[in-house]
Length: 353
Image (cartoon, rainbow, N blue to C red; front, side, top):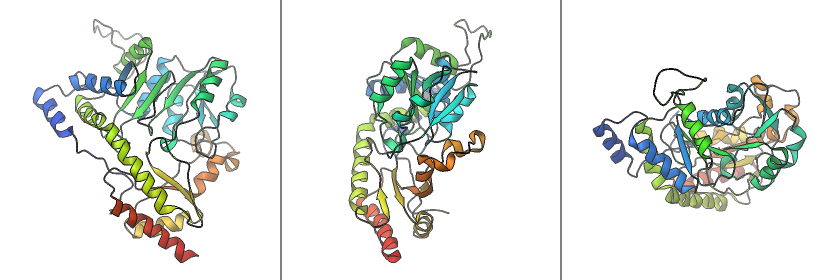
């Protein structure tokens, strides 16, 4: 189905075409092209972080981060119940075990529940800034300090939230706040970690490129073509975030005081505009008929076949998964577009009352 209002649409109205064209004309389209380093530096500078290491996706960024921290078989990593499954998969890819912690009312990992899940095998915590809401990083960093744990921030949905953990990992998928179509990047202030991230993403070649590889590594490199697009996006990030803030405000105003509909807490940066509604599936079908795409909330990790645990129906994450959805959220949405969308939502609820 083609939607008049898809849930997401990339905005490529900066210097993307100019930079990609320059990359093609120069012939430096591989990971060795200069735009990769320019993007890494620009995104690191924006976040006031020393080092950026670009890679092929947000998932590979998480995997690299865990490997760079020495996490592997026998280790455990604290992961939120409410997240996209790639967060948990990254842990499994290393051979470590994800240990899940339920969410609070803001959908983020509940710091009050973390300590009870820590064991002698726990090596790291992976908070996820869900839909652009910053986790309680003060509490999480305090727990990490007390138990000598590393912190890997899954910031796939949170470009613009300044990282404070050991490594922060971002996605550049087409539906993210900034995009390169695919791609990811790790940020860290630790030069040794940055070096290890870059080493692991590029097949762990030795400096003399002798084809002797002393460890298992990956081809997780970003191409210069992707980096050219990503750089143009970073240059416009303040503008993009400001526009999305306006979109959030218009939704807040257009959807307030509707019986049966619950607005979610404010976001630090807007990735997707999420809400809860008592008749979610009916509303989704109605909006689809009006040309408006929506998406469901994440399902708990403990409900996933690969991590199935019998207590999943009791989780907060499951309660939210049962009635949550998010609306079209992209920079090209106009006030008139949002008036149409919120008007249809109001009409649905009015007809149901």
